[in-house]
Image (tube, rainbow, N blue to C red; front, side):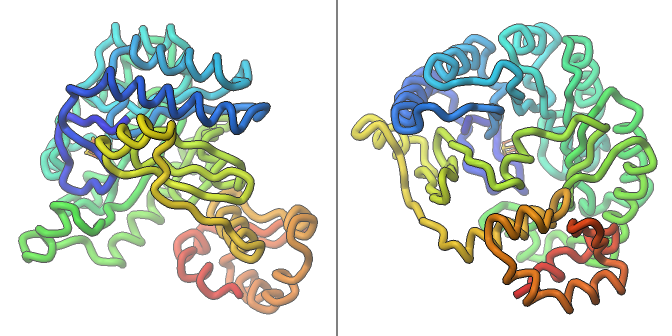
Length: 366
Ligand code: SF4
């Protein structure tokens, strides 16, 4: 759902701030969905994720129209996880209840921070109170499965402010937290501000200390870390995210959406206009595609598994043979010795120290 109220300074997702086209867009979306349903007949759908953009800018009727269309075109598991990304300031009690009534069973709220100065800096439309009210309203509307996104290492956000964020998050009815450090993406307003010397980002040591503290805080407050940046109460892992990390098939609809089915990856035009005219012409809007080699698939499988819940070597062997483990045996043993990895029962998993250095460690595997 590419529609947003405005463009946040740090965001590099494709989004537009006009909402004139919603009805026509939904028609295009339905054509694209129908087209894929013919090609991928028989696949069982275990999760749907309305992401964006700001899907909660749409009405519950709009979302329901799409949901019903998916249900009539695919085999949707009766227990499917159905998430809607929501921004504080775009929903009220009634709208959240209506989203619940149409079958949305997981809500992901773009809080980013509970600190008003942080929120102003990030150019978000909400403040702390709106964020807290949105979480409470979602809870009241019957959403048991609530995620919030939080960002640390925001300029001027000190350790105390981040601590207050974590404390408030843990005190609210939240089952899942995605905690990311502020990342500088090319082409964003923030990137220009940094290049122009108007803003200085936090240094790596500060960032690492905040990340480490986040892990300590959340794991001592009932959350499990099940991916580098994702934490949940037991049983509330995001089915949708796990599918990405477990290399399962997924289909993305809409501008800029990516798909991965049977080892092939493709992506759509990152422009609403081009997306809609392409769907009009050929019922699809594919901008590019690639077929992954066995080696690429293996490396991706390993990287995604290690970044999340760990790598099952029995499964790896069954899918890709024994080569990776033989080639990297010494390096893995060294990582175990140095306390970065736990290796037991044919399963390898990052420790907290490993998660901290995971990108560096992953680069050194052959
Ligand atoms: S609301 Fe989200 S998707 Fe929209 S511009 Fe801001 S960060 Fe990007």
